[in-house]
Every structure is written in structure tokens, then in C-alpha cells.
Amino acid sequence: MNYDDIDIILSRVGSQISKADKNRIKEILDTKEIKSTDHSALFFLQKLIKIYDAQRIFDNTIRNFVEICNKYLTDKKVIYDESAIDIYIKKPNAKKKKKKNAEETDRLDLSDLSSGEKQIISIFSKIYLTNNSENFIILIDEPELSLSVFWQEMLLPDILSSKKCNLLIAATHSPFIYEDSKIEECAINLQEYITRKADK
Image (cartoon, rainbow, N blue to C red; front, side, top):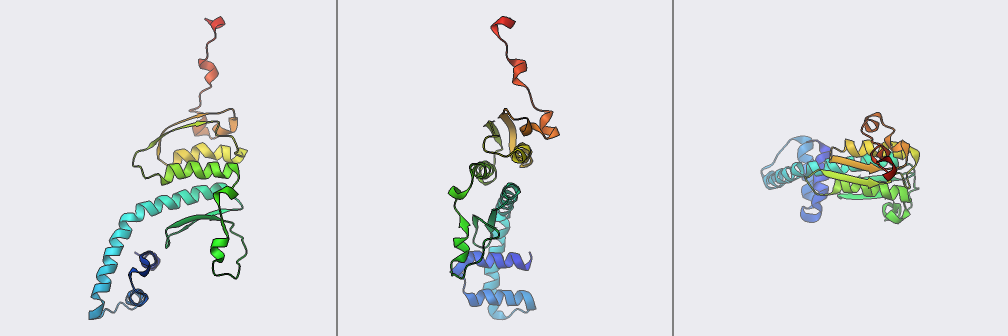
């Protein structure tokens, strides 16, 4: 457990613990000197660390979601504020305004995204953020719609690399969807399975 983790833990508690107690806990971590009056604060911190450790798997999942989405976004960025447990989208180069709520004014709504960006966020939020221990069977019809050629090449490998997909079926007219060699060897041309009355 490092100092940054402790900072996140104390931020998540909010006003349930006083600022003085938070500062004292940080001081103890810096100096390693414990007074007799510190035991209740340290007991409280110990409990918070246990809760934080139990939640770590969810934090890691959210980080993975953010990382995968940011592979696709160029002039926007998905941000995960671990202290506030908040996920949002913003323009990374947005000029900071001299306002109290400047951070909030830089945020983008989902309606500000292109149809392709919405599709990417939607697919990966379902895969990563659904609270479900079961893996998915994913069926996608024409995943190339609204996606650039570059995104088409990345989509299926990224879905499979999530390790949350037991079976992936994608019906597509785009050869770029199966550009990845591992995906291509699993691809089937449906024409091979279509029989016409004249062929019988």
C-alpha cells in the first residue's frame, strides 16, 4: 500500500472523517510516530484499507475499460477519478478556465460523441462495467457501421483480449474486421454454407 493509495482511500471517505484526522494519518505515515491518541484513527484506517483492497478488482476493471476506450478516442479522453469514483469524458487539451467548476465545464456529454465513439463506449462499457461474473456470448451484426477502418481492425481483438468473451459471432461485409491473423483463421465465409434449389 503506497501513499497514493492512502490518499485515494481518505478522499473516498469524504466528510466521514475530519480533515484534522486525515492530516494526522498522513503525518503518521510520514514520521512513523504514533501517539496514544492515534489508535482510533489508525483502526479506522485499517478497516478502510481492507475495504479498498476488496474493491481493487473493480478499480482495475474500470482502469482497463478506460485504457481500451482511450485507444480509440483521439481528441477526447475517458478519465477515471479514483478519489471521487467518477468516470467522465473530456477534451485533454481543453484550456483551463478560471472558474470554480472549470473541471466540470470541460466534461463532454455522451451526445457530444460521434456515432462510432458512442458505439465503442457502449460495447466496452457492457463488457467491462457490467457487474456479472459470467463471461459473455457476443453477437454483433455489421460491427463496421460507424467505425473507421483502423477501428474495425482493432475491435474484435480488443473484445477477445478482455477475457470476458466465451463466444464471439460477428456478421460483417468488411474484410478489415478480420484483418488480425488470429481472428482471420476463425472466420467463415457463409457463402460456403448456402445451398440453392438449383444446386440440389
